[in-house]
Amino acid sequence: MSTQADTSPVSEATAMYDVVVVGAGFSGVYQLWHLRERGFSVILFEAGSGLGGVWNLNRYPGARVDSDGIDYQFSHERFWKNWDMSERFPDHRELRDYFAYLESQLDLCKDCRFNTKVVAADFNDSECVWTLTTSDGSTTRTRYVVFATGSTVEPYRPDFPGTDDYQGTLVHTARWPEGLEYAGKRVAVIGTGASGVQMIQEIGPVAEQLTVFQRTPNLSLPMRQRRLTAADNVALREAYPETFARRNTETFAGFSYDFDPRKAVELSDEEREKYYEQCWQEGGLRLWLAGFIDTLFDHDANKYAYEFWKKKIRACIKDPAKADLLAPHEPPHPFGTKREALHQNYYEVMNQDNVEIVPVRETPIERFTETGIRTADGRERVFDVVVLATGYDNNTGALTAIDVRGTDGRTLREKWVDGVDVYLGALTQGYPNLVFLYGPQSPAAFGNGPTSAELQGDEVINLLEYMRQHGHTRFESTRQADEAWTAEIDAIDDVALLKYADSWYNASNIPGKHRQMLQYLGGFPTYMQRWQTERESGYTKGLVLG
Ligand code: N01
Picture 1 (cartoon, protein in one colour):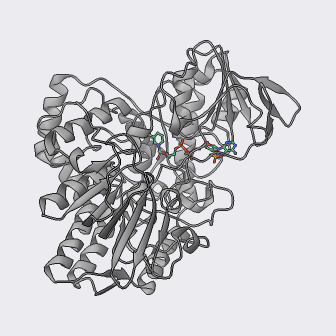
Picture 2 (cartoon, rainbow, N blue to C red):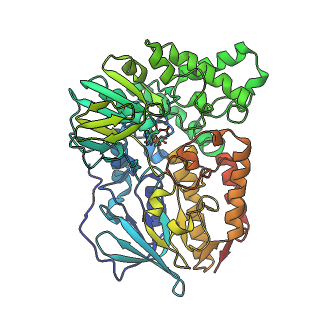
Picture 3 (cartoon, rainbow, N blue to C red):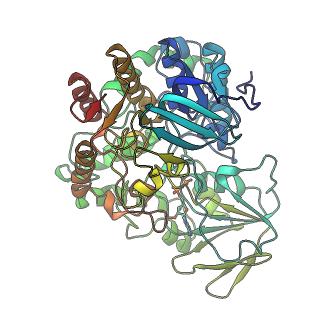
């Protein structure tokens, strides 16, 4: 089934839409589906070739989601009643199949323009209209813009000297070319985030030699992947109503499981160990997001979790030198303060003789050469393929890559150079009639994507519906509301441990980027209360309507 629609340039020069949605991942699809059903005229622009967002873009070997599949889908019965998953954690292919299934149910592609990147958006204040320019040179006018551009979109490529000299294959995980061969080759992977862990698991078993350039060990958790049978899917279907109700109304991160309300520091060693072991055996993100409530706030509680993790991982690693690199005695940062990755055979692969770890803090990459990489100790290693698993300009990168100009003609890039203030993680003063989904300062990237697509998505739809029903044509958040939102996030960040890690959560993964917590840290239930308060005020608490 195809999720690709007509991609020929369409002249939208005279077209005027109610809403333009940018991005065809979960959030964008949700908007297109619901706004269209409510009678808004909508078009969706997507830079990629089809539906799926990051799952259409991310095709590197081993790419798969770290949410259990039961959580990683829309909660509407019309979809889950006929959708079977083949694995507990679906891979990128199966997720594209899911989007093809959505297409078969919703007929979305007829209102999508694929291979069409939005490069600019300009607001005309007197007309109260946005004009979007796309990569094919067309312009489109619209009352409202919904940027559903995601968090992990713009690849980050560190500025290593000599990359132009390198004659081998240099590739970023996010732009994996179809058919790239690595079996029997000498391969380097730079970076050990979620993408790095997944790539290493695939490459290590078949490469002649794999060299992993590691800056920070990943405090990765066991995925406990398994195939799902027809009987499993029947059982899941029975559990879905309760699972989705809990996910969408109760839990902090929008998963069907939640933090344990007990404090690690108040429990006996036996009680702690028993619960950690339970989380470990259940697998997925549980030791992190179903962990004890004080783990991310209290150093002593956090150290208990780290010690448990370290004991488990070190027991899997044969070479003591590798063990010190992969699970050091002292935590590289507090446990769970960077997004956890999930592993399958990562540590088995790391045990292999053909897999070497280069710790780049001690032995930095000096430069790329014609044939490989030279490190600061003067050693040059030869590689056929070098994989940059170095992550993304998360949260803001997809938005600052577009020339989005608001009422004062400034781009978002210019506005956000010294920090981001995005009310409700969705609105920012000076950019009327424009909404971010899965955006900076929302809870989305600290939680489960489809939950965010639905919960935040419904509030955006409510707002647009309210505008229509009350004859308004313009909304804009106030500077005070934007700044108060940042203050709320900063207040939580102040008492949490996340600030002790350099990570994309707080923008410190990109050299020169303003360091700031970019996730809403109050959890989904509180986040939804904030929207409810705004809605019940008639959108006058933090917004100005015109
Ligand atoms: O990116 P990352 P990612 N020299 O930023 C290292 C989602 N995702 O693509 O930790 C050497 O996490 C960097 O080192 P350090 C998921 O939300 C999900 O892996 O900063 N190394 C780090 O090891 C995830 O969190 C899935 O010290 C350098 C790595 O590169 C997010 O996407 C799968 C370096 C970057 O890790 C991003 O994950 C994939 C340098 N100059 C992605 N610069 C699943 O659902 C950076 N690094 C499972």
